[in-house]
Length: 483
Image 1 (cartoon, rainbow, N blue to C red):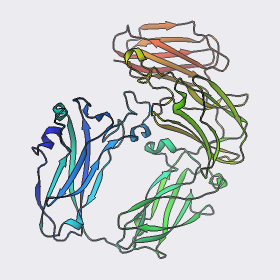
Image 2: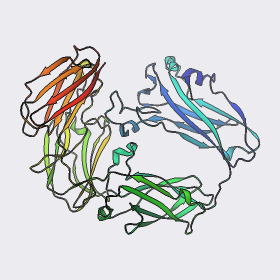
Image 3: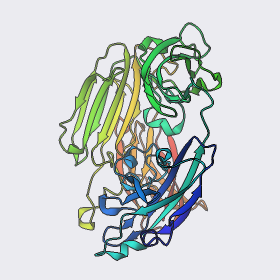
Image 4: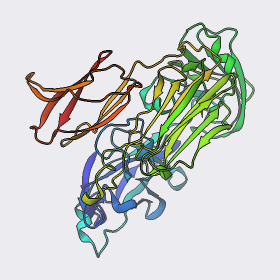
């Protein structure tokens, strides 16, 4: 992996055509690329931003253009599971998103080359605009590999290579925990086209809760597909607290396949919350309410309730009575900046959007908060829960929720409290040496323990500080960074 200037790539000073000798025993040849754009140069801040448009990339084999592609991440950054990380993380970029994996692009050149001979492999990029040559000072971090595959080891072989849900892996945290239909990735690892697969799923030890799903389709060698396994909500109920999920290919193309070691995939998971008392959705829109929509769907994706017509800076409380089953409450943001994002909150007078913060939470009728959505969620956020079933995590009322954002910040922070009940609410801030640098003993609390307040620490030196919020019922400390 190496960094090259945009102009160097354009002028063929870097990654010029290379002649490679192809292995005579090779059965398949692929070029795998990983490219990210960086720098803020020229009129469109090349090559990280591009003003909403990436450059075109080209793969040339023996002097003939075979593949054209772009790496612009228009929506992917807002879908990043690493939410609330500071910076401008939700915004589109050239080939990467902060805190996320970089996408590999793979191109099959087997039809265009012959094993045992030489081939010319070349890379090209869209020309630097003549009218804006400064863009050429941007750079791309790149890796490109030629991968040679031998003939497949098996004729009939299928594999479960991943489980999207249920899964505790933090990369899948945007749709976990869940009691929705399990989703697995099925891959054909045999030379024969995969047209059917008998898939078993179960929780805990193999036994009475095994569900069999018969998949049909068409997958060529190394192709894969996400398969959703329909389950009844009560299926999740009977797993005896064993929090690991299994998926297995039992048969491929109607027979036992030739390699069993890749048939099974196991994940650990956290059960979703079960709500067994009346509850309501409490939503406060920000001053860009048209960007946000709320949807409640059942396990089959059927729309149960929605709110798509909220007015600016308005509170809504909707009490819901649901049948037993699994549900997903989702909030989306068309601008990919959540309900509260520091960059969007920059005043219009300073070149920003002047967007205020809202909130979304699920509360028990006559009780405390069950779930609070993080406001800095990017494109969307989900809360999956069950009604009428106990999946291991019975209804849990959050004792309280505290958020100080953005963090890091140059001095202006937002303090957000939910269910932080108790009188005599106070705020103190200490530096790393333990010296008191800020104190507010006159904060007005309310019976529901909700508070939104701005804290101005612009006068403090850059460094690490500790924010402590105290009431008669709770004490909480958050670590913040001023830069």
